[in-house]
Length: 165
Image (cartoon, rainbow, N blue to C red; front, side, top):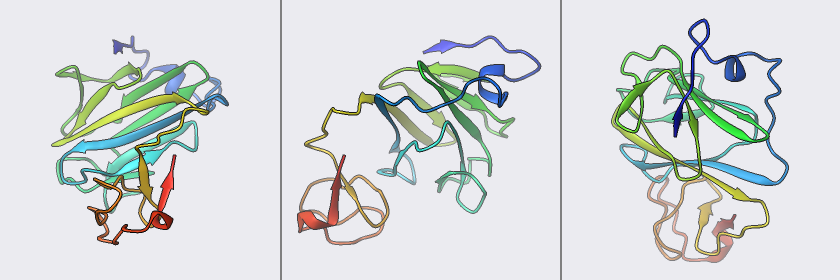
């Protein structure tokens, strides 16, 4: 994870709409909560600029953590780069144990918002997660194929309830 130089408080590549933000055609980018109150929440990026914030706010990805600001940070994607940018959050955005304003994320990069730890995965679109099934109701990653969803409680004993990425 590389710390990105700042200009006018924000990296132009993330905040400037003319920066060429676009999702890559050949990769799938997913952000998953791996520890904290929303543990198990998984969100596949469907747009080049995705905001993350507290439940009840207007963020694209909503985290149930009172230490997370309503609009805490944004993830910006270009064809060859994924960048994380703090949005002047009260408690900060952390990567590699350092408070950051902006940082480049790589496959399996972890970052923290409040008491919530997240990980980004960047994989080729043809790569199949044979082991990774997602709840069709709430998009949470269940613990096993036969367990109930840890977030919404739906019993996923039947494969039909899963969406395999």
